[in-house]
Amino acid sequence: MSHDALGRLHPTGHHPETPERIAVLQRAFPQWTQARPAGVEAIVRCHDDRYVELVRRVEAPTWLDGDTPASQTTFEAALLAAGAALEAVEREAFALIRPPGHHALRARAMGFCIFNNAAVATRHAQATLGHERVAVLDWDVHHGNGTQAIVGGDPGVLYVSLHQWPFYPGSGGPEDQADTIVNVPMSAGSGDEEYLRAFEHVVAPALERFGPDLVLVSAGFDAHEADPLAGMRVTAEGFRELARRTAALAPRLAAVLEGGYNLDTLPTLVASTLEGFAAA
Image (cartoon, rainbow, N blue to C red):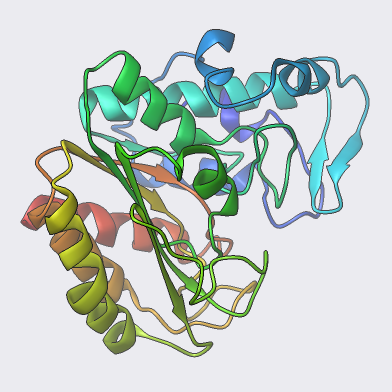
């Protein structure tokens, strides 16, 4: 799932989160399906209506926080990204979208993120598709503080995050745990061996205990060894194996794109993940 407008809307200049991220993926995967924008009613399940209106009213280039640019087309792009996430959970698909979402909080943008696509899709799966137990597995290199804040207190949602720590945004440390919140802080320099060990010993048991109807992956690729914004060493084969192991535990599976800022490697990493999902 994607939308052809995401390669031109929400221009960001020299910012790492650029429209070209989606353009390179759409060229690499020409079979992608055009998504519909989300309605505002889906967004306000997770976001304050005053914040949604603030994004809608942006008319000139500005910054919603120190890392997050916005302009006249940001609202349109964010609705398209969220809409593709909704359709991904409906169709058990991978949403190739931007802007990413997992840092976005209920009432403000954060860390390149406008609306929290994973949280919006989770609430849609509960409210519209009847899924009573949804697991969000976030393997972006950064902790998904926004997703945890929005859905982490819901006993029907398991939030699991593998992320570099200590690192931006500073949350998700070893003491940040709850019945349905599992944070797995990883040391800088961790690669395939460390990630797969963590999956085997922490992530898989948590998913098995929870018994989700749906697993939604916040699929960030900035833990890759060649990504410019972090310090991890996961390879394409590592992402393939994470995906394969996730799919083996998921009665239904969907994914949304989060980070990943090396335009040369991003299509290969998405392809490896899709191969892993299909191999289970």
